[in-house]
Image (tube, rainbow, N blue to C red; front, top):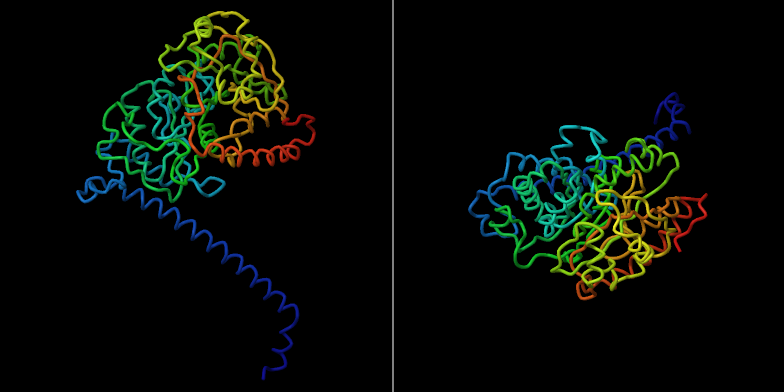
Amino acid sequence: MFPRCVAGIVSWRSVAILAAVASVLQVTNLVLTWQLKQREVVTGERARMGEVEKQHQPSQLHRRHDLYVGQKVSDDHQLTLTRIARWGVLDGSGGYRVAVGAVRGVWEQKTGMRGHKHPGEGVTLVTQCSLQHLHKIPSLVKNWQGAVSVAVFAVGSEVVAAVRAIHLLRHCHPEVRQNATFSLVHPLGSPPNPDLTPASYSTCNIQQEGKMWKNYEYQGVEYPNNLLRNTARKAAVTPFIFVVDVDMMPSLGLHRAFCTYVQEEEGHGSLSEGVKRGQQGGKTVWVVPAYEIKGDATEPVNKEELLAMRERGQARPFYQELCLKCQKFTDYSVWERGGPGEIGRIRGLYEVLWRDPWEPFYLAPASVPLYDERFRQYGFNRISQVCELHVAGYKFIVLDSAFLIHRGFKTQASLHPRKDVELEHNRLLFRQFKVELKAKYPESSRRCY
C-alpha cells in the first residue's frame, strides 16, 4: 500500500499530463517510422545505382539489365550519377525521383544569374523526352541559339545510360555543352530495359538502332509528361520560357527576334522589366503557330518558304488529322494572309480569346502557372495548363513570322494502342480540374468551355 502522501500526488492532473506525453510519444514514433521507411527507399535506390556503376566486373557483362555502358565519358560522369543519387527528391506522388539541373550548361555556370546578359539569353526553350529521343537535342539546341532546358525520362535501369548519353552529347556538340541544362526523372521500382548493351552510347551517334521502348509504352510505368515539363521549367533561369515538345523545331532566329520584340515593340526596355510588368497584371503569352511538314521535305527557314510549302501540299496545320479543333483557333488563314513578314523580326499580329479545346504553343513569362502533374500518358496534359492561363486572365497574342515545325504528318496510325483508354481517363480528370479552377480563381468570370 502506497503512503498517504504518495497517493495524494496521483491526481487527475497527473493522469492528464501522462496521457498527453503518451500521445506525443506515439506521434513521434509514427514520424520516425515514416522517415525510416523513406530512408530505406532512398538507400535502396542509391544501392541499385551503385551496383549499376560497377562496370568493370566481368560477371556483369552477361547481365544486360545491369546496364553496363563502358568507360565513363568524362570526369563529370560519375559526379552526375552521385548528384542524382544523393540530391534527387521524390515528386508529389512519391512515385518518381527528380533531379533538377543535374547537368548545367556552361553559360549558366559562368553567369550564375537568374536572368540574362544580352537578348540571346533571355528565353529558355523548355522540353522533355525519353532516352530514345535524346539524339534530337543537338539540332534543337543549334536551331534555338540560346538556353535550353531538357528533362529526360529514364526508367531505373536507364539512368546510367541516360547520363552517359548526355555527356556524350556535351562532348560531341559544343553548343549542347554551352547552352543545354539537363534534369533527370525516373520512376521507382521500374522494370529494366533489355535492349541496352555494353556497346550502347559509345559514339557521338547516340541514336539507338533496333527495338527501344516508345513513349507511353513502359510496361506499366506511366509517362509523366507534366512532371517532366515542370522539372525542366524549374531548371530554367531566364525571364521567359518557351515550352515545346522535343520533336518540334522553332523557326530560325525566333529566339533573338522575340527578345528584340519584347524589348522594343512591347516597350519594356528590358526582359526583366517585361516580366515585372507581367507580374503586376499585364498577363500576356505569345502564340507560335505550329505546322506539320512531310517527312522528306526540307524545313522552311522563314514564313515565305512555309507558305510556299502550304501551296504545294508539303505543309499543313499541326494535328490537322488527329485533332484539328485543338489548333484551329490559332486561325491559320488569318496568319497566312498576313504575308511573309520581315525576316529576322516578329510582331504581334492579332489576339485570340481562348476556346475549348485550344492548346497552342506559346512564349511566356517564367511565372506562368505550372502544369498539373496528375496528367500522365496521352491526353489533356497541355490543354489543362492553357485552360488555367485563360481562367487566370492571360491574353493570347499570335506572333507573325514565327512558327513551329513538326517533321512528318501526324496520323492515327502513329499513336499507341491504348491512346483512347488514356484519353478517356484524362478527360474525367480534366472535368475535375475545371471544377478546381473555380475555387482557385474565385474572382474570375472565365471558364474552360
